[in-house]
Image 1 (cartoon, rainbow, N blue to C red):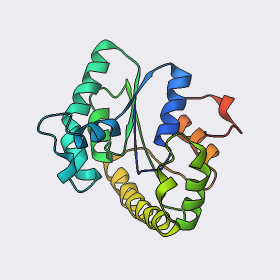
Image 2 (image 1 turned 180 degrees about the vertical axis):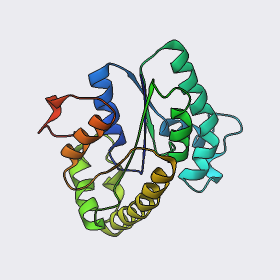
Image 3 (image 1 turned 135 degrees about the horizontal axis):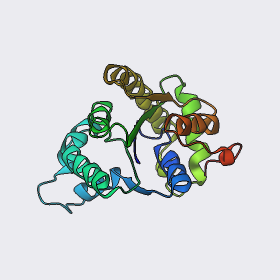
Length: 196
């Protein structure tokens, strides 16, 4: 099975991908790592530093991601792809490659306040990728507000492309369990466990 998890930054994609991998024993590919490689100049012709947002980066990455998904399908490898570059329109297109072997989900947080999202950032401070450590309170608030705006637009795009969507609210652990259920990954062993 191939799992494709798209979503707004800081929506829980990596947490969900780790759980999918743990339960199904599949590999995980973090699509955003390709963005970092592009920014570092690792791939000739990929000038990610001149791109201004996730949508532009997604346009450049999509042919590579599609090829990787096709390769995983041909090898019958279980793989979970996750990243902000997996936009709803791309998730729908990839699902159509083999609807029986590909599960898709988009994660966002359109129904939370910026203050509540900043509190979630603070809860994640103990995680290895504590990206918010260098931000002041106003920067965190602005980042959360921007993510909420992107989440609201993404929710509409998911409806247009018939992509399963989950709104990550205040109860992160319960929402992650719902996301697992949407992907058909039923495992209650994570109930009540910290998401770190």
